Image (tube, rainbow, N blue to C red; front, side, top):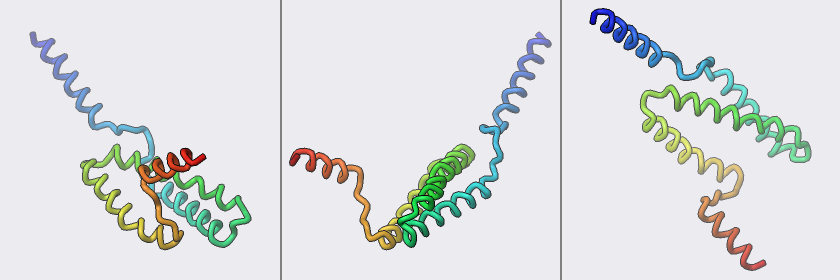
Length: 125
């Protein structure tokens, strides 16, 4: 009975150690990656605005999204409150959207509007 109790206690300790272990074996300091993504995005925007004839600026800019997506995933895995994290992301999206529309002079359509527009185009063909 004593050895069974000891074995069960060791399993509980091992389980609690595994629960506090990091979920990813990675460097969680994503600040450097974010800096690379921001620089890449700025190069993309500068190329889009001032040098549209040179696609190399746009190619460099395409690195930004996968890096930001990785950082977002790491943030989701390690946040204490996923709901608050997603609310902050949503608020940031709502605040930044008017600036995007102002800068590009293009209002983004919702997915439903895009679907309706494409279906309407298809019917007329």
